[in-house]
Image (cartoon, rainbow, N blue to C red; front, side):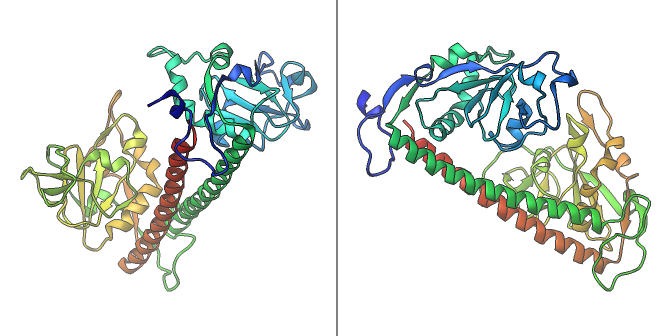
Length: 408
């Protein structure tokens, strides 16, 4: 491929043609570092009544690099110890979340963990998208096991291919619209998750209580309390080879303990198949628990699988539930109160949990008809969340595809 062809993107707006130009970031902006008052914990640097925000590394991840609000505010004394921006600028994080571009849309002082692009000779949104696409590659400036050293000289000397100003404007505007769509979809997903969380809190009794605050009409009786061990028969998965065949035509469907960390309280399908004839089929109406992880939080979960004739791999506990109890209902309840599992976990470096300890877990039970209604309700919520997640993933994939084709 010729050098000239390398400077032409695969996809571009019809009105543009010709090569992009190679330059460095230091030639298209004055790049300076932010500054921080010290010691940063001193409250004299802050004033809640101030209209000058204080931009920290943590704000970047929370707002996806587009800063519209800052909780901390700088006092007059604090403003004298930093660089204050009164208009939107492009910034680049050089500490913690290294290489993440930022745009401040409000007046703010800038922490010394950021570089500021002053006097820009570029379209801000275009370079924001370019830097966001490039962010993982800044890691090459760190030694294995050490923190990345991304200083201003490295950034200034970084080569970049640029189209003319009009094309930069078109590209930047196009991706800003895509980001707005992604942000809107992200909010829909978060709203659906928040709704589910709220219902989980309301539709199962609080600790020490036997009635939920919210329930379907026609049900008013107290729930009963019991131990998980009194309503289950325990077994374990087999040591099945993880020979991922990716086709149920070639083997038995299998779920491994590591898969339990990825899925929701109810699994509709599996992603592995094994040719091994070892192990037994997971009985219907069963809960699955992972037996080991590096954190207690990793073990504080359970799931049930609706697909039939599935085998469980090693390090998986199987709790087959009494027929008077809906396993899906119980899975939602246990996951909603997952912190109750923390005291049952043992181990130091690697954490473990056993059938004996899980048997002591208290659960609350209601009439099987109400259980069925509750599980059906949460299954519908879960499907709605999965649908919103798929829409978000699709938008992100579309953006990534366009980034790959519209930049050189």
